[in-house]
Image (cartoon, rainbow over all chains, first blue to last red; front, side, top):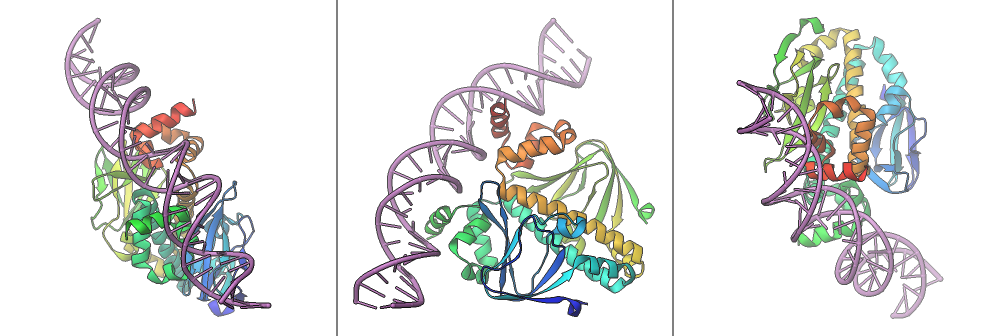
Length: 168
Length: 168
DNA sequence: AGGACAAATGAACCTCGGTTAATTACGGCG
DNA sequence: CGCCGTAATTAACCGAGGTTCATTTGTCCT
């Protein structure tokens, strides 16, 4: 099924889609690193997640309801990915039990990830979230800028710098 | 399918499950109001979500991986719900295409909700989150205590009191 | 009506992170 | 090597929210 997808090659800074676009594809990241982020009305950016090779991503509301994407997706490194329209997947799943269950697996994993993120944002301090990120994803924290790390944690680069000093 | 579930009746304060329990049921809230919350190591509570009648809830990691529940679920009003083991659902979905697609629908909706919550926690101030809650769920904000509202928004009751005053 | 307990508000003080702006690394690259 | 643009750090100030504790407002109960 995935083999039917369209291959996408991206240079650093290329966007897969922008917040507000109509785009109901699911993307399978083959190599490189994507960055998903929100832009607020006042222009501030907030990083939603990092998507290294092996990740699967799409805007849930765009996939499920066909609404405009709620975030932007950009390449942080030269990246290759496979694009597959969700509708194709969902339609095929109507008659393909195996595919339907694969979809269940994907959605379950996605829900799990978001549940963890919700917990972290709700119950952990910025310092704890940073420490957790470094501990669980040392590779990621090496591959992105301080500013992006800070944005992911939900603070400014300056605050992250302070935290790093505190942690000595 | 849902008819095969076990009926659960709860008084105010009764727990459906506690954080750390093994419980891989999906619950369909028929009437009343449930409250999902995390307990941190230091004893602080943080409300994950309110589940009024019509909601569907379960601990995603418990459902998908069989891990201990990551949060507690308690009745905030006298509540009736239907409990259905996720495994039963998932297994039945292996051979029932319609059910599999219903499951896809549930998981998609769940992912959407969590995506929105992530956005709010990451990009909105406490004041904005409170205003948004009152605007989109006026019923909920009437049915729960100030302390619970504050906990959901991610602040203390005192801070919420200040915010309300600011908003006059 | 009065009493008792919980919920909500208010005030004083403190801390963390935001803001702004200056300063110091750290690459390319001519 | 020195220049320049970007990233990272540091500092000074400010404001939102946390903490603690006191006070007020409810609400239920008899």
